[in-house]
Amino acid sequence: MLSFQAVERVAYNFSLVILVVFFYYLAQERLSLSEWKSNVFLGLGFGATTAVSMFLSVPIFEGVILDSKMVLGVLAGLFGGVVPALITAGIASATRVAIGGVGTVPGIVGLVLSVAVGVALRRPLARAGRHRFLFLLLAPGIAAMSAQNLAALVFIPLIGAEATAQILRLTFLPSILVFIPAAAAISSMIAFVQDRSRAHAEVLSARLELEARVRQRTAQLEAARDKVVLAEKLASLGQLTAGIAHGLNTPLAVILSANRILVQDLQVSILPMVQVVASMTPRQTRAFEALAGACITANPQEVTRTERRKLLALLEGTSVAGMPRLADLIGEFGLTDLQEELSVLLEMEDAVAAAATLADLGRMRRSTVMIERATENATAVVGALQEYARTEADDLVENVEIRRELDHVLRFFDHRIRGRVEVVVQEEQGVVVQTVPQALRHIWMILISNALDAMPAGGVLRILAESRRDYTYLAVEDSGSGVPEGLREKIFAPLFTTKSDGAGLGLGLDICRRTVERLGGKIQCVSAEDGAGARFEIKLPCRGNRRVDSSN
Image (cartoon, rainbow, N blue to C red; front, side, top):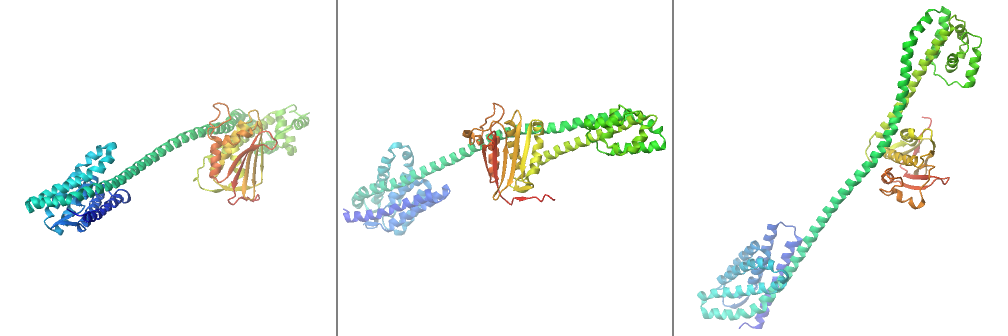
């Protein structure tokens, strides 16, 4: 019978089996390999370990050795599958042939049996469920022991039954004392690596799924935010459109009215003018031309009641006495400087017709001036709109003249300001800040609109702009009811509004805050200086703030 010293040698030989745990760990967790490359690597690892074990085997009979190839064959089939099992069997068989001896054929048969049994045990292991640990403690060792003893039967035709029985007696004790514990230990360690890899894969999968859900949810929230921001922008666009409509409709109405008067005068007055001029003497014609030239080229000036009474007094005792149109004409166009020509006109036989002709020319001139001024107003509104709609890159910083930008923005609110709100601009002359123009316009639009909303019955809108050492200070102040101290931080939160239902979405100040912060500045709400109303203060960082030379 094999001595216990030999058993110790067999146990030492089996300690090499732990190498397969290392190979399995590398294949499962450390090396990023595809499935077939992982199987090949695992098969090579099992095969190399088996070959080393066979070279360090314990001889138990002439030409017969005892090693761990049966256990490794079972483990290769059980944890690796068909490909690692076949590679392990191939390497181990070649090694056994190289070692030689009468045990070569039985050894190869045992290897084939062990890998086949290992592969066959994969399905029962998958179905073991909560008995999996017990299955791993017993099944691999019993399978390896059975393959070892069944392979020994191949010795009968080779060396006879008596010698075969002796070999079986020599291998029985080591197979019980070593095969089962070694297979159980290695199986447990590999199973631990398996569980760890599976848990890692599940955690990775859960993380990826969570990240995907977070990305999806973030995209949904951003889409929802974009919709709400778009709604706020559309609301602002509605206010902007109202301002533009008023700013254009008023001058267009003036142009239309003045044009109708001008057309009417041309239709009615041209023939009488020709007749009056045709009846004049050369001296009267020269006087009329001078007076008519003054009416056509001069800009009409407003005539006060006092001046009108004085002019009417001058006309007393003439044929045109009590003709207010002529008195207004003389005052508006400065005809008092043409005393001689006026005297010639008043001495005419048909002075009333000549005076009426001059009054018609003056009225035509007034119509052209009205059209000119209304056109300038409409052009200014369109220019302000073009400035507001002008697009730049989000990060394109330009030199922005504060007062010029402010004047453009105030034009959009002219219909809400005129006659009910006093606008006071306290600005150091020619302050320029380096910032994003479009962003600054949006800030002005939001703060001025909110300030006007806070003063439904009218009031004072005060705007301040100062260039300080490290920053540009901007402020918009109203004389409304103010903001309670407890709400001064909340009003910058999205969807928070102090306006009545439907009057606002609660995003204007949030957009304003984020825009200011994007520019690197800060915004806060404080009480107005006189204690009535609210003041929104903005500090934009100094990026080369400077003054514009007012002489330019």
